[in-house]
Image (cartoon, one colour):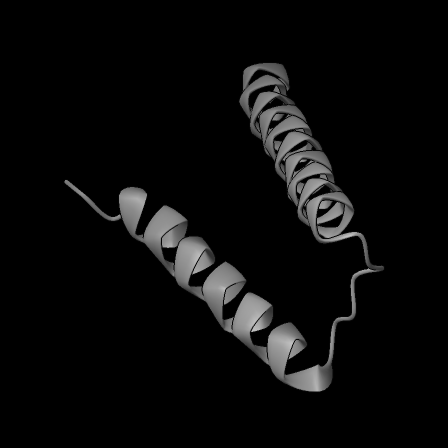
Length: 69
């Protein structure tokens, strides 16, 4: 039972770190582009939908990794 919890904690920790780093990188890129254009970033609903669908696509790819046997 303890060994089962260990690998679960490991995957949760790795997923959290990857999510944190990718989110920070995305914010950094958004800020850099806004500074180059000398304007504040404006994100509308359409942009949010695009990002959401992209995230769902990545999650689908990750979920499919575990199905290879």
